[in-house]
Length: 450
Ligand SMILES: Nc1ncnc2c1ncn2[C@@H]1O[C@H](COP(=O)(O)OP(=O)(O)OP(=O)(O)O)[C@@H](O)[C@H]1O
Ligand SMILES: [Mg+2]
Image (cartoon, rainbow, N blue to C red; front, side):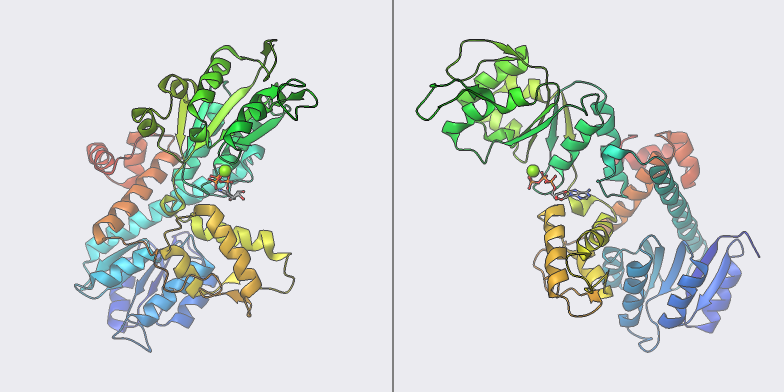
């Protein structure tokens, strides 16, 4: 037995095998010369970090077998940090490997010092992520248990929403369609002292303009044709709870004036009524629109904006949440599996690649829909890229090598900061770089301490 961390080296050249084994004295090195042996070792020693030569038999001069191995690793153990060795100058393969979920790459011939640095950085990252997962699973925050994520980007958002929940400020959630705005609004409500009160949602874009006022404010009997009885509006129904105004950017200007009065004074009048009714509600708004631009065009009131956006939460699109697409795909397979007993229960390697390469313009909603479709379409025990309708998708995310590096650095740094509670000196130490270097990288990459 050894307490050195296990490292799996997938390499078919016996000379290189020896060299690498010798170079990694600090790790407990396992060797594999082909895909089958690699996958067996993966199960057996569960290494956090793997180095992978893309040229493996039966295609030692190509990259097909190496990519197949990478996909299989990502499908079975997605947290594994895979460092890919590509031929000299083969940037395209390196780029593709990163897009498929590889942690980093290096170019042959091997520079032991450089590779050693990448390997130790990979172990740091793996440890930080494991620590993050442990912290997250140790405190199952009930209000957030519906939110599936392992990405530093989203964990930060959840922490922020939790902090906001404890206050009574009005929050504005900004995010593209399907990013989970409503889910986060519900979590904010559930984590607040109003959790026992109602959560009332209204989609301002879905209701015809002439009905929206009565929907929001309610109406007295006889206020207009068809108003046969007095009816409370959504605002009143949210009394002592949370009012979620979805697509707030779609509220017409005249109604914005009325809404402003309610937001400022917390009193409403029903349509056709004269009585002022006090309401105690927390307001959460969401929109996919650019309200600042709407203000500039005179389509949204600036005074209302500042009232509803006391804090703003920008929800990242799915493609910017490291590792979440796969995590969510597996989550939705479990969630909907019961709808097709005996259906597929996992993703085929090709599907893993397709999921990692797709840009997800419809975000989590799109992902869930594709999984539901795939569960119906699949013939075998595993969901394929065809089942997901992700073959030759035009939405493949283009990424330059530079971007791939920057993304990898950004994830590593965010994870380090998350694990050290935002302490820059501790994070620098964990990352094995100096504080000034970390500062510079954070500035260049636009990462803040959290
Ligand atoms: N992180 C997540 N984990 C699990 N499920 C999620 C997550 N984010 C979103 N979902 C699910 O995806 C679907 C879309 O989420 P939601 O309705 O909250 O998004 P939205 O931003 O309000 O979308 P839209 O702009 O289309 O209204 C919902 O079924 C929601 O439960
Ligand atoms: Mg919504």
